Length: 418
Image 1 (cartoon, rainbow, N blue to C red):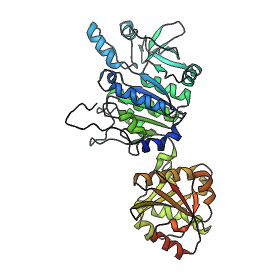
Image 2: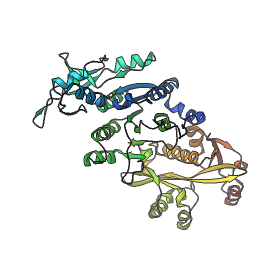
Image 3: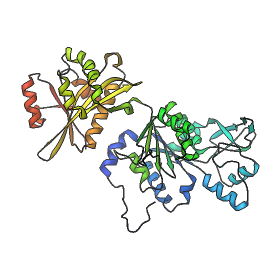
Image 4: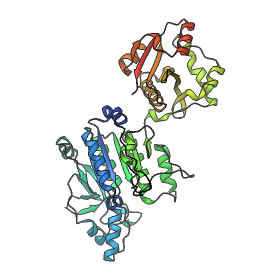
């Protein structure tokens, strides 16, 4: 945490920013896993306060804690040599004894990991089952379950677990909306800048490469983040717990402060490139023929290419949306335009994801409202996306002039973004 008196504390107090996310997070389960080293730092109390904020917003929180740092310290104090300290390799009797002095819930049924690559892992365990019922009962009673990296097998023996694995198995069992790994550091690119997003494939590749820049603990998080997404958890976040307000800033700000690993189509939306123009024109042609879209030339798209975004599936473009920004009388207004999805991919929620993405782009540009013009899809905007039909006078003056000249008499829809 930032304890430098010369540096002002940056408090996360943008209440309006938080409230924008509350409806989609309310009554959803977040599994938060803390690295053990963070519990020994002065700022850990602030992290716990952030967890309390989440619970106060009716977000159901499950906490998992690691013990790697504590095991290391205790082993050094007792003069014990460890085979490993991350709960993945071999754990002998002396190693498991270091983990025992803690009271634990009995929410995990485990079994010995057994012999791997010819090595008996002894007291290292694997999770067999999560007692979902007991955890949900605690959540329903507004109690935050706290799970250690330990479990009991059928004979009552205590086994060491990897805390990242615990977090992900619990998240899968509870159908959590998010897993948040609060780590000792963040994930950075080769140039030292923060990696904001990773796909499942990218996370798996980083784990496979075993990049020396990231220690065994981070590689573990990448491995289990990919597993979580593959098993239905929409988002996994990895944040640097040594940063001020890391947890709340990652969850309740547009830019975030950590790395998000994603699995769904929303995160496969990318900025359009000049090389996409032929594909965009080809995809749009059917909608143009149906009079659903205004015809656009190659030059018109090329000149506004920075406003266009492409939705890909398996590397193939299947849809697009554009976000144009206007400023008038001190107000910033966004226009959602050129929304389309290939006919072969309709009725699969891709349109909703593109609209939601466009709205988020407009918020990041500090736009107060977003407008959309439609001749055929206005019911979709009204009933599915919360837009309201309004008068053409709601359009910025320059856009209104184009509207009048087009003669299309499109419905004008508007949605507040603040």
